[in-house]
Image (cartoon, rainbow, N blue to C red; front, side, top):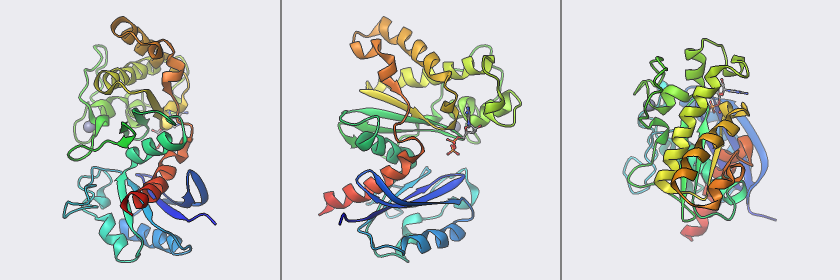
Length: 294
Ligand code: ADP
Ligand code: ZN
């Protein structure tokens, strides 16, 4: 019998909990995100069903993920109002005795893809998600990269397109990358109820690809990753991939010399694990976290 691990993925709209091991999900449940104490009851009830070795938590941020910090587990500045100043590690510790491992949702998704998806056998990769928010997770030399706190590349300050007069939707910075290119920015700029209502061929998709290619190009200039994975709801519009690849290829092939940049279909790719990247990554945080500790 394989040993069982648990994962919790905290998201702005939904919370995913699952049991699994080594890239496999045995059982999964989804709860809509509510007030933290309400969700906590649901999470704990689910987790108590099985005997588990450890729990991996993948959470929206910004949050304190350094286990040496006395506020380890604290969600510091969430746009999800109820969750600001909530300490997820403290709350779970009171109810569960399994070892806990925490990282950002996007780092966990990057880790899941690195171990079991589009990033298998690579050294360095960057995972972007473009949905309600924009975020990125970074694997450098086979490890999740954290630095002092953790990166928040979704809030990069990028140059606005000269024809774009939209003010941006980021509640903190207005016209950062997330403010100009997240799903809600498409909805507000073009006055549509959901981004899918923006017709194929609409100039909004060209603008979206321009902003996302700036993110991709700056990613390459900063990390020169082996591959870039882009997921999230907005990328379900498949006209974006070819446009982003073309703009990135034009830039890179005038500047660098490497065959990988001549094969953009294999360089800029969707996540192989799809919507499960985050939860599979969370389970892997638990499994590998425990292995490294013992
Ligand atoms: P979240 O970021 O909340 O986890 P998603 O990654 O699913 O959620 O992203 C949701 C966003 O994706 C919404 O803003 C929605 O308008 C947009 N979206 C969903 N489906 C599509 C699609 N087929 N094409 C473009 N945008 C989409
Ligand atoms: Zn921002």
